[in-house]
Image 1 (cartoon, protein in one colour):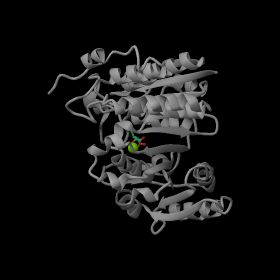
Image 2: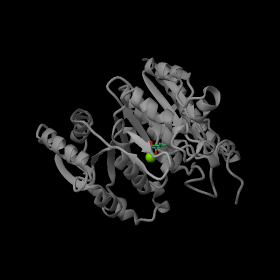
Image 3: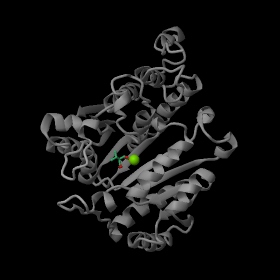
Length: 371
Ligand code: IPM
Ligand code: MG
C-alpha cells in the first residue's frame, strides 16, 4: 500500500515523540511491504517563529494532499499571554482541525494491568474498563464568537451547534458502539444549556435507527464523577467539544499516565492522529517523554488505513515493552528508559528482531542512572 503521511511535529516534546512513531511506521512499511511517504510541515510555536503564523497555508496544503496527518503537540510558554489578540500556538491545532473538518475526535481509554500499581485505585476497580470517548471537535465554544471589552473588564465566548454537526458525529459514535459493547452514553448539560438540549433531541432521533445500542443520557458533572466511581459502566461516550476535552483528561487517570493515550480525529476526507498529551515544555529535548501515546496514535492510523495486522503489531510491541519494564519516567521515575529507546524497541519488535538479536545489556546502557 502507498500512503502519504504529513508529519506535524509542533512544539515541546512533540518532535521527539513523533520521531519515535516515524521510526515505528518505517519498520511497519519495511515488514509489511508498504510505502509511507512522510512529509514534514510546520505548526504551532515552531511555525510562528519561522513564519509569523501558527498554521501556514503551506501546512494546510500538505495536510490536504496527504492520506493522514501525524501530529505531535503545540504550545510554548513564551506565547502564553492573556491578551485577547495574541497569536498562540494552539491556533495551529484549531486551524487544522477546522481546515480538514475533523469533526470526530476518538479517544480510547485502554487500561493496562501492568500499570495498575501506579493508580490510586484497587486493581478490582479497573477490571473490565474499556471505553472510548467521541468528542465533537470542530464546533461549540472552541469556535464561537469571542469578545473582550476595550477596558478588559468584560469577556464572552459563544457556543453553538447545528443539527448537522451533531448528526455526523453521532452516527460515527453509534456505529462504533455497534462494533463494541453496544452501549452509548451521551454526556451534556441539558439541564442548563440549549445546545445540550439540541444534542439530546438529535441523538434521541438517531438512536431509533440503532435499536441494538442501549443509550443513556448523563449530565457532565455526574459523568465526571461516574468515570472515577464506576468506570466500567461506560462503553462509548458521546459529547461536545469542551466537555470531551475535560472528560478525556480525567479518564486518563484510569490508565496511569496521560502519556499512554492516543487519539484519532476523523473527517469525511481527512484524518489526523495525535497523542492526547500537550507539549510538556519542561521535558522538551530531554528524551524523557513517553512516546507511547504517539506510537498508539500511529496504530490508530493503521486501523484507519484498514491495516489491522499492522496496527496489532504496533500494539503488541507496546505491550512487550510494558511487560519487560521498558517504560519512561512518567511510569517509573527511578528505573526509566529514554524516549528514543522505547521507540527503537517498538520498531525492533515490529521488525521481528525481538526476541533474538536485541541484547538486554545494550538496552540497559540506555537506562537512566538516577537511583
Ligand atoms: C486537546 C488539547 C487542546 C484542546 C489544547 C492543546 C488546545 O487539550 O487536544 O485535548 O483543548 O483541544
Ligand atoms: Mg485536552
